[in-house]
Length: 255
Image (cartoon, rainbow, N blue to C red; front, top):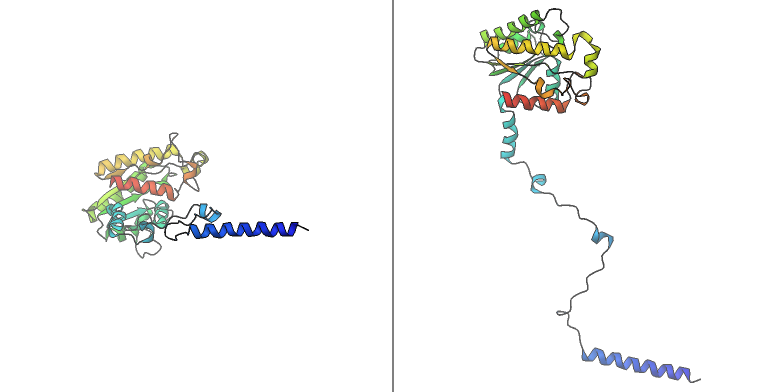
């Protein structure tokens, strides 16, 4: 019977205390800082970086010029040879030179065959253009020839033709590349690493005799055991894009 009265008196007392406290200490909105929110999953997650100026803006002219400068040595140049050059052209690593390449092309057939789009023998077409530099790539299809001296003789005719018709053109004789151990062991069409070393020595000697440049790209490709890395080529012979970039970088340093 007395409990409701007691509860009413207690409630009234508490209400008076609360009203008294609010009147004696009014809060200021300027002096009291808002409480920091508790961290949530969204607040603690690592934010994505904002795009940098390099990724959100167009490349500057100086950056573009720097890229072009790396291939400056290939301006007004021609690459003449076999399927190795077809792959190099396809990858687009050198975009400021002309390519006269054909699968199966040899130091003999270059005087007779035209490119896929050409209408005259490759040698006639190339020598009519007055290039500053010509990079030659022959030998792979000739490794199986019975007489290596015929290869050297016909290669010499290519050099002689350029020196006669284009006396101001610098000529670069590129070495053959190594092949993978598996491909060398198969000994198909004379394609072995021992034969490649033999031909490269002949090419170096020929270049010295003719007074032209010999570019030893072989040294940039070969492993310690005298082969091409298995991962460097899909067929053990033709280098992939990564190794073609190694090839081109070597040319940039030596032309």
